[in-house]
Structure formats: C-alpha cells, structure tokens
Image 1: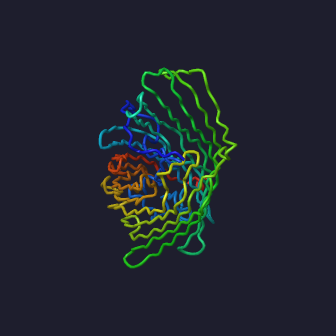
Image 2: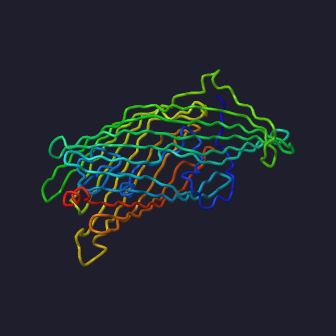
Image 3: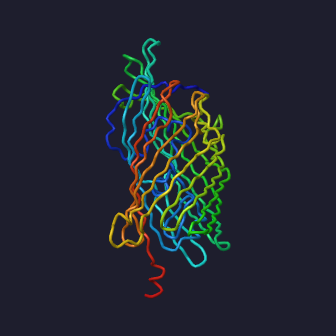
Length: 417
C-alpha cells in the first residue's frame, strides 16, 4: 500500500457558503468524517444522551421511546465554520447540512420512530508539491460523498420505570476520491478516480431506567449496545488523461479490480457500547454524563488504505445539562426558555502518523418555547480537532445548530373526531 503524508499545503480557494457537510482534510480517511449523531437538544448538552422524558426524542436510545407521550416531528440543521492551520498555511470554510429528520409516535403499548440522518461525510481539497523532482510535480487530492442512514426504532416499557428498545439502520452512500498528478510545463496530466458505492444494515439494543427519589429528584440511566456490522463496498477505479485546463485529453482506462479481489470489499463498522447517568428534577433541571466506548479495527477502506493510518479503540465523553426556570410561567417568556450547556471530548479513534486525532468541544444552547409543548432549539459549539504538529492539520470550528421539535396529540384528537 502506498503511504501518503498529511504534510499538505491546504489549497486556498474561495469556497464561500457551500451546501456540503464537510471540508475536513480528515474526511480523506476511511469512510469519511463521522457526524456527531444526536438531536440539537442533546448536542447542546455536550452530546449527552442520558436524558429522556415524555416530550423529548432521543434518537440515540430507542428504549427512551417507551416514555414518549406525544407525536413528535424533529428536524435539525447544521452550519459549521472551520479554520484549518498547518505550520505554514491556513484556510477557512463554511458548510451547511441537514443533521437529522425524524418522526416519533407513541401508542398504548410502545413507541416507535423512523427517520433519516447523515452518518459520515467526505469533502476535502488538498495539494502536495514536490520540488525535488525535475520537472516539479504537484499532487492534488479531492473527494466528496458520504454515508446516509435510514432508521426505524421501537421502545416499550417492560415494567414500571424500565424500558427496552431496538433500532435498525440501513446505511447507504457513495465515496469518491480523486488524485491528479501535474508536472510543470507538461501539457497533459493523469487523474485517478476511485469510487465506491456502499450499503449495509446494523442494529442496536438499548435500555433505560428512571426512578424518583426525595424532593422530586429523579435518576436517569441509559445503556446502548451495537454489535459489529459490515458495509458492502462496490468499487471502481479509472485513470484518465486530462489537459492542463482540466478538459478531456483523450485516454481513459478502467482498472480491473476483480483480478485483485478489490471490486467488492467489506468495511467493518465496529461495535460500541454507551452508558449514560444523570440526575434532575422533572421540567426543572438536569445534569448528566455519558461514556461511549467504540472498538477499533473498523472503518478501514481497503481501496484507499494507507500504511500510516489506523482506526483505534476510543472513548467519547459527554457531560452537560439544562435549567428551566418555570415551564408554566404566564408572566415571563424567559422563564419558559430552557438553558443548556455541555462539553464533549473524543480521545482518538483516527490515528495519523502515529498521532491520535482528538476532539474537544464546548456547547451552549436555548430551547425556545413554541406553543405549549414544542420548542425551537438554537445552539452553538466551539471546538478544536487535531494538531498542527507532526505534519498534521489543526481544525478550529464554530458550529451553529438549529433544531425544531414539534409535538402533537393527533392520536388523541382522532379518537374525538
């Protein structure tokens, strides 16, 4: 396998406002940059998913659907500004994307939901110049695509205060990587395209427990386990000759991947377990923590495998909470606003040049009441990923989150109609 260094010069191009969910150089690896999967409400608490109630939807814990009492329509949008720096260069990008779309419905015996959310995203533009060769060579790397997930979940109360759930997901998408090698003063150059179409099914199992103590203090706990699964990747590669202006140069050759068994490969999605624990007072305040442990040896895309890149076992830590002054206040709008805050820390996962790519973020948000039981959620996240040492790239990001959670009682209305 060829080895490639991340000692790139980031190409300074005018990207402006783009309808693309990633421009991260780290999305080059594996199946792309993993999106932090949670509703806006949960993300504003650092990604903490240990809280659940009758009006809030927790997309990460299907068992929490056992507590749902209202039909819920949820949609989340994301706008992210990133600043990338190396020892010599810097660049800035802005992206916008849909974060999730879900419908959750309670019945007398159980609750269920279905929806769609982006799982990973690929988007990068990198350049490496080698001045030691004659003529000087320039290698350009660009890519796009990602994996989306359609999901359905069900949760039911096994006995009082204890619920179980199961969620099934179908993941699908395309990963496209392109590599161009340009020689100075040479009219033609070559471009290698590597394209993959992926699909696969996964499941996770969950449980929730809620118990009330003195002074209306409640304990919330959740557990999720997802077994290892696979994505089937159907691959193709081609080499094209292009002119210096990017137009077709006359020759294209499809590479026979079947001779090496690379026309169809498997990508492992590693197993994980997640445990959440929190305390709070119903409709008043909550504080909790969450630990998600992800096994290693997954996400490796054999078509684009690199010797200096590994995917290791890692942990995701989240802590956060909310405060709601007075949910039924008639005199003060701000007393009915939910104030949220939290932090997250990812201790690795992706390893490049023997360095773990870590991620730390601080979150704040507001849940603005819309009617009696619905909310518009506005949040912001400040964070840093990676480092500009060891020939790597540091990302500083500012993430704006918008989520709308609309609740209704149309099941009950239909009974009266």
